[in-house]
Length: 226
Image (cartoon, rainbow, N blue to C red; front, top):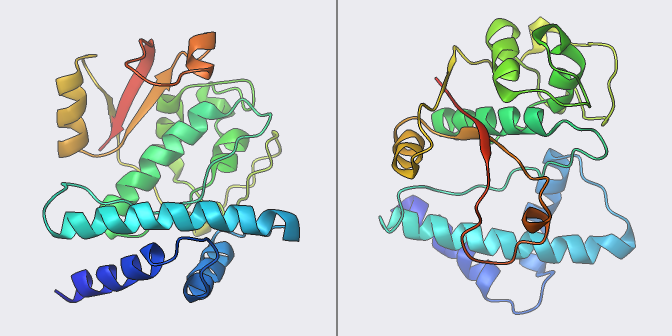
């Protein structure tokens, strides 16, 4: 009941302002920027704040409904991943799945280091900014672990491996490939195990300019963590 009251209070604050930049959210906004090392110019601050408040409202409303058993999952605001000009999408997929699994088990959204994988998973036949596979990232993480983004920040370029075992934040004990492209299998795996790393062939123009409807895409690899 206490959790519901807190959620209702926060949702009321978010939804009671038709315009962005509500002063009652200033403290939460500043905490979020500090947590994710975000700094914006005066020009960008208002726009970024407006997006953040909108997302907070959606997440808050959803989680309130989840407390009322209207949903079987909850949402949380993590840091948005931007890989820049580096072809590290496979590492973002692997890290995103692990962050989701970590949140499922601990209730904490901890940004993990894609750069750790960019710099250090070459021995697992990944190619840094020139592509690789999520399963190779999972193999590396199973053997070594992975540091947080705060301790090993993203640079969007390949550098020397600076992994430190003493400061690793997470690891996975193993992973499996989803044995079928059947949507029911995806659904059951998501429900029973948790987040899935999916590699999608996104080179077709229809993917870039997609608007609505069911998009036919090619799934190259689908993996889930143990």
